[in-house]
Length: 330
Image (tube, rainbow, N blue to C red; front, side, top):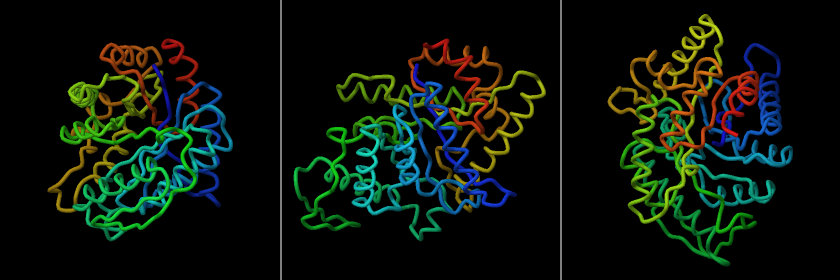
């Protein structure tokens, strides 16, 4: 079983130069994770949250590429409806070059209503914008020489993408998906799959099986490491630590659920968790002692999961996980 990191830097509130503090701590965490044997680090992209989240993921990953040697570096995800796809193709190819082929290109449609409002882009256009952007990026990375594109949103005449990516034909494509139709689309289009960290293990495994069956229906062999299961990590060695961790997780999930719900409450993203926040926290996270977490991961392994990316705050949990959990899966 492979293990990676998932998340991103945040500014530190209440201190001078909080962005520098937060980004420096995150960079240090990734460097330590590489030393501890983590396989990958996936970085989020968010805007207008007021929580100091990473907005320029490709820029931060380019810096990390220069500081690391072995850990894979990925986006989870670049929200394509907000970006010029040619510029994304150029920036991502540059990152693949600088990292010597360690880049994983995770993409998505986006789910936070306030972000689409901030960019003055209707969220209802997210699917068509995403699909056209991916058409351009695929063409940019697989066409020899110059190419043209004329679509609904984007028009390019006789352009060439420089540099070319190191990985051929292109860096691995990863897609964040949750609804059955989106899971089947990911399989049919050849994407690797991100499963979000907010659903219960039961819901997550239902989605895993839908994707696996859809891959097999295409005639391709299913490889378990093509699915990265994101999970919150909460090391709790006492009952008091466990309750405190559950309370903190419930609070963060409440905020996330608000981001993924339309203002009139009529539409919810597949990222929105179970409405019972305690259930979502206790039945959707890797929470407890290292021994309890090993048992939970062993049950996932028996179901075919072999790639888990961890979301946690601070280095302590990642260190304990590496020292006391990962050896059980060596």
